[in-house]
Every structure is written in structure tokens, then in C-alpha cells.
Amino acid sequence: MCPFEVVYGFKPLTPLDLLPLPLLERANMEASKQADYVKKIHMQTKQEIEKKSEYYAAKANKNCKKVIFEPGELVWVHLQKDKFPEKRSSKLLP
Image (cartoon, rainbow, N blue to C red; front, side, top):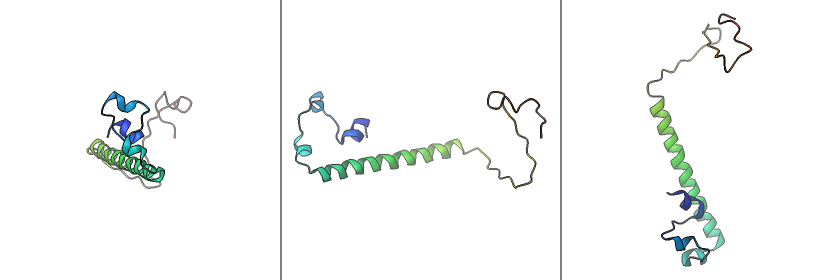
């Protein structure tokens, strides 16, 4: 769906559709039906965004190895100068 359709509930076919003239099918709709229609469009859009996000995450993490550390294991932590300037006086701090 185009962003205009997600927000307003219809696709403008011509620039005249953007004028504040009531469209027949929209003007005859009850407020509750119109609200349900817009909620349905928003739910469909949310589901599509979540589906695409999962797809992109799966593609990005395809070659990543999942490592789980147990409590008490020793790990090497690299503190970048930009993110932790006060904690990076020496690389070998405990």
C-alpha cells in the first residue's frame, strides 16, 4: 500500500480526489465502519512491516554465529574510545 492509502484509507486516482469533496463510498460509510476499515489497514501494514523486519534480520544474521556465554567464563571485551572514554585507560583492565 502507498503511504497515502495507509493514512486516509483510499488511493487518490486524480488530484481532484485530494480536494475536500466527499467521495460517495466514503461519505455513506458509518463512522464505526470507517474506523474498522482504517484499523484493518493499519493492522495489515503493521503485519507486513513485522514480516519484512524478520526477513531482513534473518538475512543479516545468516552468517552470524550465536555464542552463549555461561556465568564465570572469561571473555575479551573491546572498549571503543568513543563509547567508553573514561573506562579505556588500559586495554588490560580487569
